[in-house]
Image (cartoon, rainbow over all chains, first blue to last red; front, side, top):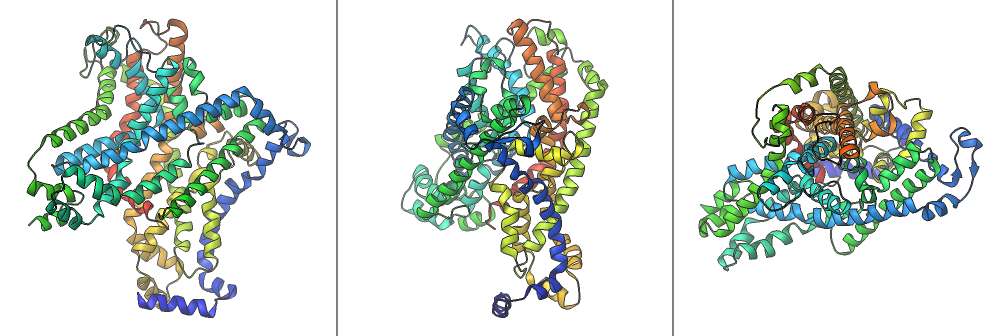
Length: 317
Length: 309
């Protein structure tokens, strides 16, 4: 350990020249060439394409033949009722998603941590992680099978139990769809979301629990005063990551669970971009929306990272 | 005694301690019940679909199939396996996933190994360049136009090349190299005259087998399950991966049904329910088979990824 830091110090003091560095590590630079080429070719090279958000881009004319229009496209999208609807839906659903989906893994981790039988705990963890490994195509099609108004299992069970008279349109009516959509999100993420919390809980010193027990603290008190504070920084970090996603939207989830009857709510930014851009060739508008979405997402991440650091947490960046 | 208990049981610190003092209480019963119910929601839907997939058409139509098949028949599976386009999509997905995983691991190692060396000059700038894509994305349309210019649009390469480099996976691998491979080991190899390539190939990679397995699975499962790029960037039916195929199958069946019958449970469905259930199982089973194995490695990888780089 000491040797390493000495070596570093020497390196810093002598300031390796580029010539020397290349001579020693040319193979490393050669390796880096591959990822760098990929990143430039497939990520950075797409950034100049963002300029079409400020153009009236016509696919037939290409970049050079299309006219510059400044902020006109942005003015246009903010007057576009479709965009306003997509933005409203995205924001409402993502915030609702955060509110209902974020706490669940924390609660679940606390419960799992308290379970008495290690075997039982292990098996239930394995089962709860399952939805994370399934595609939205699978989840969506299973959900459709389960929630069909007349022939879905959930409705049949409820009807046979005499709780309802008529099938509930879980996925076929906008407001029911909204709830089902959110709950499926909770279900999909709850198990996998516990992993980092459980890891953080393992790191809490057992002596704290012992001392608390000697002082007579019951299980709920120990959860509240020891376990929760112990995983606070994990909670904050994950919250930051999730805040950055408030502007995002997942085309796979939206389309797998959506249908024409719930268009009113299902029409979110990803659907807008897909329908307008790829479906309708309105490239400039779709790009402007995409840019807006990426920028707001980035700002949100940077902002929440700053706030977290102010609060004395580690932050993300 | 209780202290020893705590050290040995990995994540049950508090529960282990609690056992010594508290008796089995009502709280335990409630918590176990909650967990059992949640587990049921993860398992029962799939058992239901599985039961449907091997039941007779009439039994399914009369809504009497719950979690146990009735009038067992494998006709639907025979039809799925006999359907050329399904089999083709499955095979195509497998090949794309394999190529994607190999190239992904290659590019990931090429980025992570050099960046894990603190002595590398320009390391900060290079790391920054390779991390930016994680935070800023130009969006679908610029990507679409770029792929058009690169002539990969509507080819198999658009499903492979754009995503093989992943900042997140690179970070995990880099963290692993930095925390697990002792510098001294490489230094001595270096003094013995080994080149950087030799050190990577003969020392670092053999010591990194667990992370290589984990990341390969990240790549493979990620590719296998996602199909948004399949929707955005391909039109050719020959480029349809199995997940996209399933999505279209179910979506078109649902739309046809809602349009014509408003779901009155009629019999004139374009895709009979049994066949649909068999298709869902056909796509789900490969993941379920390797799931126990997957799960273990995924948990490991996620933990390493959580350590900041």
